[in-house]
Length: 178
Image (tube, rainbow, N blue to C red; front, top):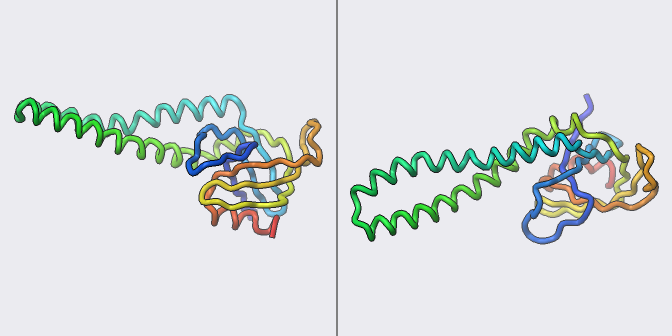
């Protein structure tokens, strides 16, 4: 049985401490002895973006339902200045919880659905890995391109930013570049 590893990728280098983009349009497929670049279809990207939008609402609803129940209980029991203090602190706590839950949901959704996204992706090029720079969650691959479709990029060097854990990418690419 052959193992296949799939990673989200971008066709440029993303710099900075935080990942700024959740719109990863490409996938890198690593099989034993072969690395391919896959491009997501426009329909898959639309479904993925819509799902992420809906997924951002789930933590908001989960946090707002108990907050609304507590709001009515606290509003009748506290004086106005104490209620204002409670209201402002609860809004800060809401956004402090909602933001990590939303971004964590994005990453979990992408991780769980990457095999489904790869089914509708089209292979564009076969890649030969020349250099790998491992970061914490973003890694840079310097590759040469051998196109699978008629594109004038043969032999051209391509730099990709790949989103994955260091250990997973290292284990998948070890036979290709070490």
